[in-house]
Image (cartoon, rainbow, N blue to C red; front, top):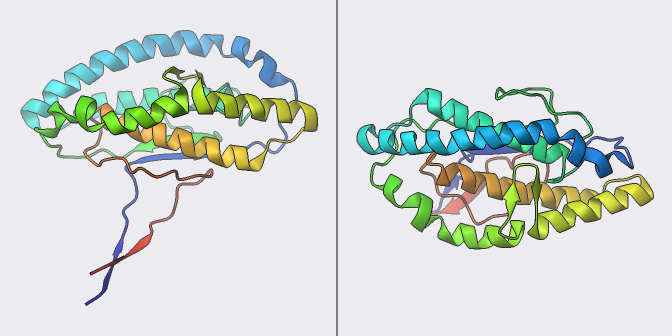
Length: 222
């Protein structure tokens, strides 16, 4: 007998709203404007690495990711996504990113990760280096093996550069490039959350394009 199943929402959710009136020239100096964030993010990512090590042992012993550590690491991912969206990860907004780990509901780039509750003690030993390897190979193409929170090489970097050139010459951000870029970043950040032990749900090999997360999909089953 045929039944239907609903594909659950991803634990890592990323959204973005494209500014309707972007400056043609501001993107050329965002490397300078983003410098204060770059300094802070360097320190935050150093702390992120340390917190992830502590979380590794916490999950290994207790099967749970301590909520305070989880919220901090989500905040680092969220801050990084805002800065990347403003600068050379997407150039999707001219609104300067806030200096906060907290969610900012009215900022055009947002990220959240659902706290997992219980986590597998066994998976924590292998998912960040072994199970995630297929995704790492794909992301090497997306980011060219080099990715920092405010910029990327590889396909993401090329698409962002192309969008900046088109913006300068036409005053418009190409909608197709925007949708593709957000899909690429969505994939990257889903893998980042998985590799940082923040979820046991394996990231899908799926490019969910566009500024909004896809709605739950009804799947045919048996």
